[in-house]
Image (cartoon, rainbow, N blue to C red):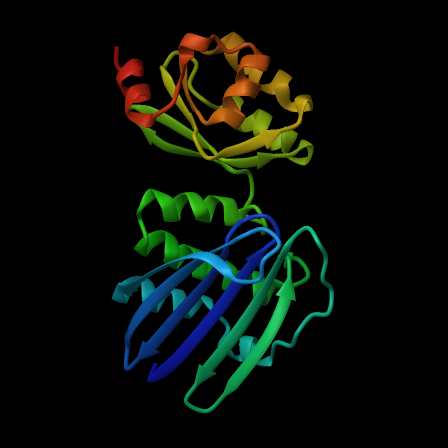
Length: 251
Protein backbone atom coordinates (compact mmCIF):
# COMPACT_ATOMS: atom_id res chain seq x y z
CA UNK A 1 0.00 0.00 0.00
CA UNK A 2 1.48 3.33 -1.09
CA UNK A 3 -0.43 5.64 1.25
CA UNK A 4 -3.30 5.53 3.75
CA UNK A 5 -4.27 7.83 6.56
CA UNK A 6 -7.01 6.84 8.98
CA UNK A 7 -8.15 9.05 11.83
CA UNK A 8 -10.85 7.66 14.09
CA UNK A 9 -12.29 9.72 16.92
CA UNK A 10 -14.06 7.80 19.71
CA UNK A 11 -16.45 9.89 21.84
CA UNK A 12 -18.05 7.63 24.46
CA UNK A 13 -20.72 8.95 26.79
CA UNK A 14 -19.08 8.20 30.13
CA UNK A 15 -15.31 7.73 29.69
CA UNK A 16 -12.46 9.73 28.16
CA UNK A 17 -12.40 10.51 24.46
CA UNK A 18 -9.80 8.85 22.25
CA UNK A 19 -8.35 9.88 18.90
CA UNK A 20 -6.38 7.29 16.90
CA UNK A 21 -4.26 8.37 13.94
CA UNK A 22 -2.85 5.64 11.68
CA UNK A 23 -0.60 6.45 8.73
CA UNK A 24 0.73 3.91 6.24
CA UNK A 25 3.27 4.94 3.61
CA UNK A 26 5.08 2.59 1.25
CA UNK A 27 4.42 -0.44 3.42
CA UNK A 28 5.47 1.18 6.71
CA UNK A 29 3.18 2.67 9.29
CA UNK A 30 2.78 4.33 12.64
CA UNK A 31 -0.07 4.69 15.09
CA UNK A 32 -0.72 7.54 17.50
CA UNK A 33 -3.26 7.49 20.30
CA UNK A 34 -4.47 10.64 22.06
CA UNK A 35 -6.59 10.33 25.20
CA UNK A 36 -8.59 13.42 26.13
CA UNK A 37 -9.88 13.70 29.67
CA UNK A 38 -12.74 16.20 29.64
CA UNK A 39 -13.80 18.17 32.67
CA UNK A 40 -17.49 17.78 33.35
CA UNK A 41 -19.61 20.49 31.69
CA UNK A 42 -16.63 21.76 29.66
CA UNK A 43 -15.84 21.30 26.00
CA UNK A 44 -12.05 21.53 26.35
CA UNK A 45 -9.85 18.71 27.64
CA UNK A 46 -8.37 19.06 31.13
CA UNK A 47 -5.65 16.54 30.26
CA UNK A 48 -4.26 15.18 27.01
CA UNK A 49 -2.09 12.06 26.84
CA UNK A 50 -0.42 11.31 23.52
CA UNK A 51 1.84 8.45 22.46
CA UNK A 52 3.05 7.22 19.08
CA UNK A 53 4.38 3.80 18.04
CA UNK A 54 5.76 2.25 14.87
CA UNK A 55 3.36 -0.38 13.58
CA UNK A 56 4.63 -3.94 13.55
CA UNK A 57 4.83 -5.01 9.89
CA UNK A 58 3.02 -8.33 10.36
CA UNK A 59 0.16 -6.84 12.38
CA UNK A 60 -0.12 -3.98 9.89
CA UNK A 61 -0.42 -6.32 6.91
CA UNK A 62 -2.90 -8.64 8.62
CA UNK A 63 -5.01 -5.69 9.79
CA UNK A 64 -5.25 -4.15 6.33
CA UNK A 65 -6.44 -7.48 4.95
CA UNK A 66 -9.31 -7.47 7.46
CA UNK A 67 -10.60 -4.08 6.34
CA UNK A 68 -12.79 -3.73 3.25
CA UNK A 69 -11.38 -0.43 2.00
CA UNK A 70 -13.90 -0.01 -0.82
CA UNK A 71 -16.77 -0.36 1.66
CA UNK A 72 -15.13 2.12 4.05
CA UNK A 73 -14.71 4.72 1.33
CA UNK A 74 -18.40 4.25 0.48
CA UNK A 75 -19.63 4.66 4.09
CA UNK A 76 -21.88 7.59 4.90
CA UNK A 77 -22.85 9.24 8.16
CA UNK A 78 -25.56 7.37 10.03
CA UNK A 79 -28.08 9.78 11.49
CA UNK A 80 -29.05 7.70 14.54
CA UNK A 81 -27.56 9.18 17.71
CA UNK A 82 -28.35 9.02 21.42
CA UNK A 83 -27.22 9.98 24.92
CA UNK A 84 -25.94 6.64 26.22
CA UNK A 85 -23.50 5.12 23.74
CA UNK A 86 -20.60 6.19 21.56
CA UNK A 87 -20.11 8.47 18.58
CA UNK A 88 -17.31 7.48 16.21
CA UNK A 89 -16.02 9.86 13.54
CA UNK A 90 -13.76 8.61 10.75
CA UNK A 91 -11.51 10.48 8.33
CA UNK A 92 -10.04 8.24 5.64
CA UNK A 93 -7.63 9.15 2.85
CA UNK A 94 -5.52 7.33 0.29
CA UNK A 95 -3.78 8.54 -2.87
CA UNK A 96 -7.00 8.94 -4.85
CA UNK A 97 -9.91 9.02 -2.40
CA UNK A 98 -11.11 10.81 0.72
CA UNK A 99 -14.09 10.03 2.93
CA UNK A 100 -15.49 11.31 6.21
CA UNK A 101 -18.37 9.77 8.12
CA UNK A 102 -19.77 9.35 11.61
CA UNK A 103 -21.68 6.50 13.22
CA UNK A 104 -23.28 5.77 16.57
CA UNK A 105 -22.84 2.59 18.68
CA UNK A 106 -22.52 0.19 15.71
CA UNK A 107 -23.98 -3.32 15.84
CA UNK A 108 -22.31 -6.20 14.04
CA UNK A 109 -25.56 -7.26 12.37
CA UNK A 110 -26.54 -3.85 10.99
CA UNK A 111 -23.20 -1.99 10.62
CA UNK A 112 -20.68 -4.75 9.92
CA UNK A 113 -18.17 -2.55 8.07
CA UNK A 114 -18.08 0.05 10.84
CA UNK A 115 -17.84 -2.54 13.61
CA UNK A 116 -15.06 -4.42 11.81
CA UNK A 117 -13.09 -1.18 11.55
CA UNK A 118 -13.45 -0.66 15.30
CA UNK A 119 -12.31 -4.23 16.00
CA UNK A 120 -9.19 -3.83 13.85
CA UNK A 121 -8.23 -0.45 15.33
CA UNK A 122 -8.70 -1.56 18.94
CA UNK A 123 -6.65 -4.70 18.30
CA UNK A 124 -3.81 -2.59 16.90
CA UNK A 125 -3.92 -0.44 20.03
CA UNK A 126 -3.95 -3.53 22.23
CA UNK A 127 -0.89 -4.95 20.49
CA UNK A 128 1.19 -1.78 20.46
CA UNK A 129 0.24 0.08 23.66
CA UNK A 130 0.80 -2.47 26.40
CA UNK A 131 0.91 -0.18 29.44
CA UNK A 132 -1.80 -0.94 31.99
CA UNK A 133 -3.36 2.50 31.54
CA UNK A 134 -4.03 1.88 27.84
CA UNK A 135 -5.12 -1.73 28.35
CA UNK A 136 -7.56 -0.68 31.08
CA UNK A 137 -8.94 2.05 28.84
CA UNK A 138 -9.46 -0.42 25.99
CA UNK A 139 -11.42 -2.73 28.28
CA UNK A 140 -13.73 0.15 29.15
CA UNK A 141 -14.03 1.25 25.52
CA UNK A 142 -14.96 -2.29 24.45
CA UNK A 143 -18.14 -1.96 26.49
CA UNK A 144 -19.60 0.39 23.89
CA UNK A 145 -19.37 -2.24 21.14
CA UNK A 146 -20.15 -5.93 20.69
CA UNK A 147 -17.02 -7.64 21.99
CA UNK A 148 -18.82 -10.29 24.01
CA UNK A 149 -18.58 -11.18 27.69
CA UNK A 150 -16.03 -8.96 29.47
CA UNK A 151 -14.21 -11.92 31.01
CA UNK A 152 -11.02 -13.67 29.94
CA UNK A 153 -8.68 -16.38 31.14
CA UNK A 154 -5.32 -14.59 31.21
CA UNK A 155 -3.09 -17.51 32.24
CA UNK A 156 -3.39 -21.09 33.48
CA UNK A 157 -0.27 -21.35 35.68
CA UNK A 158 -1.06 -19.52 37.87
CA UNK A 159 -4.73 -19.58 36.88
CA UNK A 160 -5.77 -15.96 36.39
CA UNK A 161 -9.19 -14.73 35.29
CA UNK A 162 -9.96 -11.10 34.49
CA UNK A 163 -13.47 -9.68 34.69
CA UNK A 164 -13.78 -6.03 33.73
CA UNK A 165 -16.24 -3.31 32.84
CA UNK A 166 -19.91 -3.89 33.63
CA UNK A 167 -21.91 -7.11 33.66
CA UNK A 168 -25.56 -7.02 32.63
CA UNK A 169 -28.47 -9.39 33.04
CA UNK A 170 -28.29 -10.11 29.30
CA UNK A 171 -24.94 -11.82 29.90
CA UNK A 172 -26.18 -14.05 32.71
CA UNK A 173 -26.21 -17.31 30.75
CA UNK A 174 -22.81 -16.69 29.16
CA UNK A 175 -21.32 -15.65 32.50
CA UNK A 176 -22.76 -18.73 34.21
CA UNK A 177 -21.20 -21.02 31.62
CA UNK A 178 -17.86 -19.20 31.76
CA UNK A 179 -17.62 -19.54 35.54
CA UNK A 180 -18.81 -23.15 35.50
CA UNK A 181 -15.97 -24.03 33.13
CA UNK A 182 -13.29 -22.77 35.54
CA UNK A 183 -11.22 -25.45 37.33
CA UNK A 184 -12.68 -26.66 40.62
CA UNK A 185 -9.54 -27.90 42.36
CA UNK A 186 -7.07 -25.24 41.25
CA UNK A 187 -6.53 -21.93 43.11
CA UNK A 188 -7.84 -19.03 41.04
CA UNK A 189 -6.84 -15.38 41.01
CA UNK A 190 -9.90 -13.37 39.95
CA UNK A 191 -8.75 -9.94 38.76
CA UNK A 192 -11.56 -7.38 39.03
CA UNK A 193 -9.33 -4.32 39.31
CA UNK A 194 -11.00 -2.68 36.29
CA UNK A 195 -14.59 -3.58 37.19
CA UNK A 196 -17.52 -1.15 37.09
CA UNK A 197 -20.35 -3.16 38.60
CA UNK A 198 -23.23 -5.59 38.05
CA UNK A 199 -26.87 -6.03 38.98
CA UNK A 200 -27.71 -8.03 42.09
CA UNK A 201 -29.50 -10.56 39.87
CA UNK A 202 -26.03 -11.89 39.02
CA UNK A 203 -25.00 -12.46 42.66
CA UNK A 204 -26.22 -16.11 42.70
CA UNK A 205 -23.94 -16.86 39.73
CA UNK A 206 -20.90 -15.87 41.80
CA UNK A 207 -22.27 -17.53 44.93
CA UNK A 208 -22.46 -20.78 42.99
CA UNK A 209 -18.81 -20.33 41.98
CA UNK A 210 -17.83 -19.85 45.63
CA UNK A 211 -19.67 -23.00 46.69
CA UNK A 212 -17.87 -25.40 44.37
CA UNK A 213 -14.40 -23.88 43.85
CA UNK A 214 -11.46 -24.76 46.08
CA UNK A 215 -9.90 -21.32 46.59
CA UNK A 216 -10.29 -17.91 44.97
CA UNK A 217 -8.35 -14.74 45.69
CA UNK A 218 -10.00 -11.58 44.38
CA UNK A 219 -8.12 -8.49 43.19
CA UNK A 220 -10.80 -5.83 43.55
CA UNK A 221 -11.25 -2.11 43.12
CA UNK A 222 -13.78 -0.42 45.40
CA UNK A 223 -16.70 -1.12 43.04
CA UNK A 224 -15.92 -4.83 42.99
CA UNK A 225 -15.07 -5.07 46.69
CA UNK A 226 -18.45 -3.77 47.86
CA UNK A 227 -20.30 -6.23 45.65
CA UNK A 228 -18.03 -9.18 46.48
CA UNK A 229 -18.62 -8.64 50.20
CA UNK A 230 -22.37 -8.54 49.54
CA UNK A 231 -22.08 -11.81 47.61
CA UNK A 232 -20.36 -13.47 50.56
CA UNK A 233 -16.66 -13.37 49.72
CA UNK A 234 -14.55 -13.32 52.89
CA UNK A 235 -12.66 -10.03 53.45
CA UNK A 236 -9.34 -11.87 53.81
CA UNK A 237 -9.76 -13.24 50.28
CA UNK A 238 -9.92 -9.74 48.76
CA UNK A 239 -6.71 -7.86 47.94
CA UNK A 240 -6.01 -4.50 46.31
CA UNK A 241 -3.19 -5.32 43.91
CA UNK A 242 -2.27 -8.08 41.48
CA UNK A 243 1.12 -9.02 42.93
CA UNK A 244 -0.34 -9.55 46.40
CA UNK A 245 -2.99 -11.77 44.86
CA UNK A 246 -0.40 -13.85 42.99
CA UNK A 247 1.60 -14.32 46.19
CA UNK A 248 -1.50 -15.50 48.06
CA UNK A 249 -2.59 -18.15 45.56
CA UNK A 250 0.96 -19.52 45.44
CA UNK A 251 1.02 -20.18 49.19
